[in-house]
Length: 522
Ligand code: MN
Image (tube, rainbow, N blue to C red; front, side):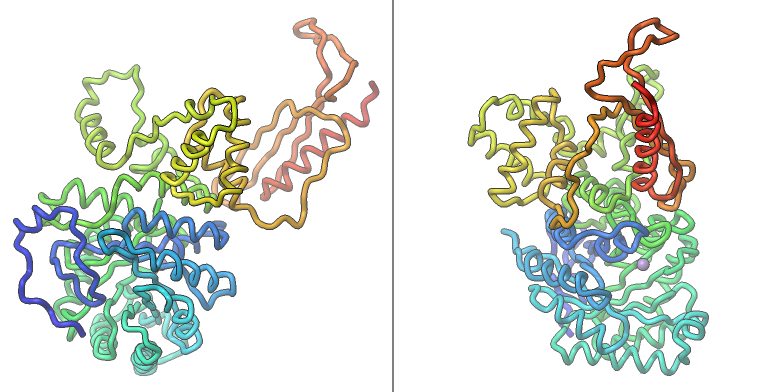
């Protein structure tokens, strides 16, 4: 255990050193006003239904999380699959060793159940990082111990301590313990097991509201009680981990920090299992906006200028699209209609301006017109593109840049403005592709797609989608006279299909339209 330095900064010193990130000591934060941000987008976030990412995408996101300045990146669950192991290892080796000018490098965490195989595998995956960490969890609530584990309290306590010591013996000196379903665990047992794993050598303990049913004041009370009743709790950092089943993950996390949690487990855009986790951007901005009047000067090391680009990247890679009114990063969050009575909304606009000035760089309005309009493949255009892509969080090899640049120019010919969103699409189409096994060769019929629309009947990945496709012959000389306009038109053929899979539904609709066309006589 590291000894606690006697000199702690006064509030005034803290106020002056507003963005200083204290040095990383696993079990202790040298500045009492500093709150660690533990990002679990790549672990809990990726457990969102339908949000699976490729290793390359995970690495890109991890790089971006480092730019954002998160203290800890939970990179995954190495024992869950070979791919996952490789992704975590790659992140540990690359992002976990990329020290910036201020000495910052994120801690890289691998999660493990409380057993030797999980812990060994997690350690193999993270150990090459400069600051490797294992987070190990076991259920402590009566319902989970009985039905999930089939173990008694005594057995769970014994396993937890044994596995923490096992991890330490492997050479891991930064270990988090997670009593799963903590908010439904018996208090006395919780204090006891936390006290014992602290003795066994953990550096942080996380208190998960695993099923997301806790009220903010209950969660705050739980954190305060743990602080007051757990032997040795002053030797570790307390962490919050809240789920959003009742829409309270952010509120619960903020109550947690008020009660003494100094590490907050969050995800970009609040993605995560079921209804998700506490959202990084909402937590960080709440702390920033109300730092002195509600949070006694607490602050994080997050570079808020990177929030929006990180959010967009996660949205794109996970396919978890944001509702337009999502706080801070939704499409409507900073849009105000020009027609409305602005006086009425002035206070709101002032707040919006305050937040947007600290959160968003001017890149939303950044136009790539300049380089898009250059007519030849100037190296300066390519360098500008490379720079912009780097600012957006993409580090590409030369041949990748060339491919993106080629398509970028083609797009520039079609569109007046190439936006950052377009650039992201170009990159994800051209670079983060998977080695092709199947390729679309060609379609035999010369067909023009006239119309295509998808209607979702129910939201979510299990929703039913109805696809509507309209086609016509591309080089047809055949024309008929429209009964409406009396103009000569090419006949069109429509097809519809419904199903839970949008791709299958689209293909079926297309084939239906095709059959109609083939069945018609020219
Ligand atoms: Mn979770």
